[in-house]
Picture (cartoon, rainbow, N blue to C red):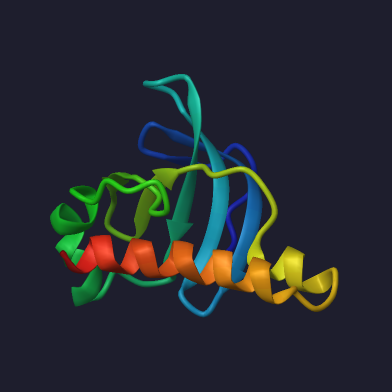
Length: 116
């Protein structure tokens, strides 16, 4: 069920939708405690076992991994990262090899850090 602007999840106030996918919707929200904006990923159901490992996720510290700030019963609160998405970039046309390799390197660095 999509959330509308003004809906509150604890100290977070939904501002606008950012996107949606198979695992739920993502929203821009205001954090009333920090007076800043965050991204909130909301699931239609309570999070599965893979989200119960939030402590491990929150301990990740890498420039290519967004920071996890909080976990609710059916939502994750993350750092809001501004800028175009990979889908935005691919909509502009074929990505040159050098740019593709740079993107792949960032993804691989993040995966390596997460698995360490």
